Image (cartoon, rainbow, N blue to C red; front, top):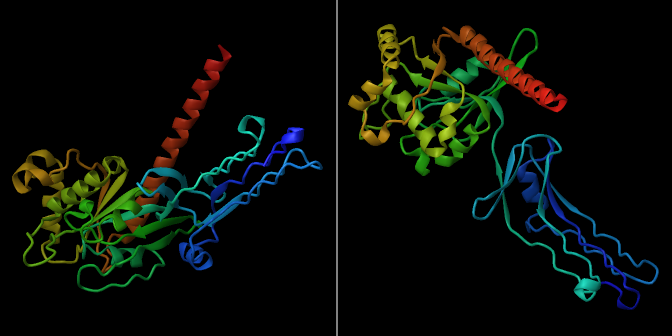
Length: 339
């Protein structure tokens, strides 16, 4: 409240902020605040001793790094991608003053959602049983569950690739896609949302093709690549423009070399071949461009060291290009200012 007889101004209410910190998890937030209600302090009334009332204290909600804050209708309020990133989610009300007849205004009240998306250098993209979990195991220190049936991976796993010079690269093995994942079938959006936060994609396909169940059609390695591309495109079109490597797994199987040669030939002319092997609604509008096609066998270790080197090379080339683009942009800005 303001103080009418002396024209005092009441203190504004505090604001509510969401702040990213490395030490927090969504489970800890839920356990600590079971009511899921956060309220900032009210401002102090104006008084004879203090005509300008003290401002209310802000409320900070500590969340893990990687959280996207959205409204109930999925409008993004902010992304918190680094330690200390913060976004205001509710503004405190104004203290009473002459223009408001010395009555305070009510602060904002809103419901928000905290959506955690993994941040990794590389994201493994593939249908169930492509061998993603096995590949992550031989590449890194991760120990995901592995078995010979679909949907072994039911939650994301992150492994760390370690190099002799102590360089570290994070790789996320994400739950297997199925046809129709963009419609939230199978693991659906639980998988696809994590792809947004990875720098590069690592497509993993079975060299011999894939069939989810007896009642679903068999898909060759070539068809698998384009069905995966279509799912990414339908979920969020810009994902198809991410840098990507294609890993052709299970090279220890019979006839693998012939099938690999066939796949490489097909990838040279994807437009014509897609139209003859896939229904029209499953053909992507644009095709993935792979920096490398890497044959491997997660079972025997064949090609794994080369893949590890190419992953690093791909990320470092991208970083170099980004740095050079930033340098050119800054140089152009300085030239404009000097004119």
